[in-house]
Length: 158
Image (cartoon, rainbow, N blue to C red):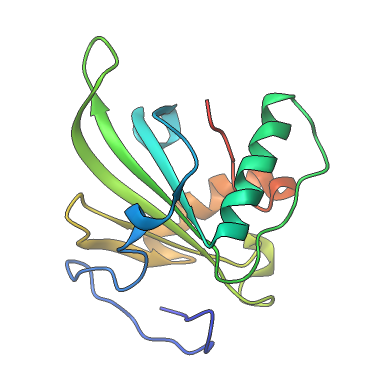
């Protein structure tokens, strides 16, 4: 894994507990339950940290709701955005917790085409499935770069 602070690499093996973002429920909750087709047609609840990143998420979400195509702010290095997902019942209510998806903003130059985000996802117990910018997170990166004008964060809150 690449640390935003140090730029060094230290990997976590799949099945190990993810080493960053595990305290995400202490972050600012920036959405309620939102339907996410891209995350397995599950409901997602999104958290962001630090406060500046959460503020940017909310501001960018307002622009998304207004169908704006510009004016989006970029996230500062170190921002972590986490989506906790839930299976849903036939009525649309959350039932069983599913995977948790993580994004962390790295220093410029980490992955310019990917807007310098590092991705990870875990099972519901925070056991790592994959992390990085390629390999099993290529799909994550590929989808998120489709909204490069939003700094690769969908910022959907409804």
